[in-house]
Image (cartoon, rainbow, N blue to C red; front, top):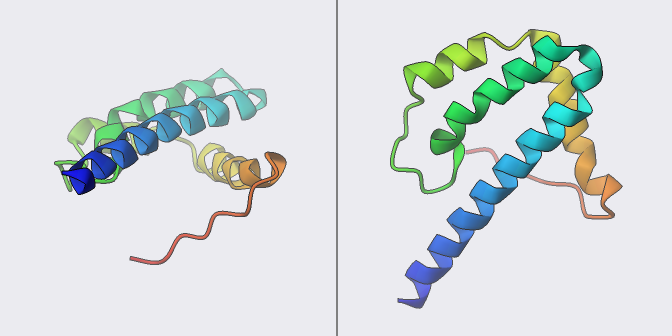
Length: 99
C-alpha cells in the first residue's frame, strides 16, 4: 500500500513539474515571438504521454501534430533554457540515464 501511495505521489509531482516547466519554457522563450510560445503551449496535449507511469506508451496523433508544429530553433532554445533552470534555482544539474 505504501508503495502504491509513493508511486501516485511521484506521478502527481512529475505532472506538476511538467506543467511548471512548460509554463516556464513558454515564458522564457516568449522573446522569440508569439508563434513559438503558442506552439509550445499546444504541446500540453503530450502531457499524458510524458508523465511517468502514463497508461499510454504511444503519443497521440494530436501530440505528434503539436510537436511537428514547433519550429526547430524554438524547440532547441526552449530545451537550452530548461536545462539551465536547476542551476538558476541553486539545484544540482539534472542527470537522466539513457533508457
